[in-house]
Image 1: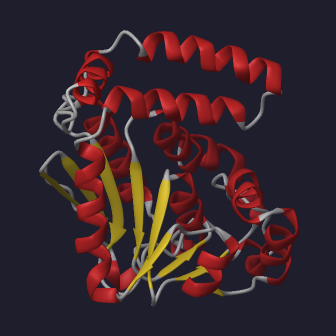
Image 2: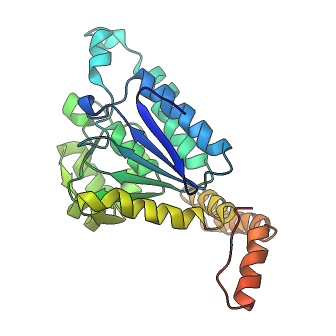
Length: 264
């Protein structure tokens, strides 16, 4: 698969999507948005892909929206339909990542701001380089949060810290992000991708159907009450219990050996 603003690699059951506009800090333009949506369709449909890593080329992960695109459309707010733009771009990207029943890991190699932060938050796990930096960024240009940040950030770091990040435009370094719960692991810059790929390969050899059902349950539990969540757990467990990987897991447990999951 060849793109002009992304690099797409598939090896060992892991697809790596690299944002490839380093001269623009990997900010999204219309082409990158379209290519990201196409890459997400590809990883969803490809049964050989069982885990996905999202990262950025060069110094940064993703600076969010390329604002020069908006300048070209006119200086006045009347010249841009912000709601329509979000509905066909970042809203779709974030929703697809959450709906695809495979694990996504954001390997945040540098700055993640605005929609770039939203992209990282939408992933199931976040690994960060010691050089990673995180910023909401929206209030710096007099905008409100978007790209799912108003949903995910309070759930990851708590309402108080999310509010502070949103209102002050505070820059959060990798160690703060780890302390806050925004990222899961922090690595030295040259170890970020190798260690994340190693982790992703482990997930690619895990029971993919079980991971997908886990995502369903966690997504559901974010907004449901306890009784509804308990019932939903029963429903997804009924599905998981009839997968080939579950039978293999039980058999391997009884035989005291490592399971060989096929993602089925």
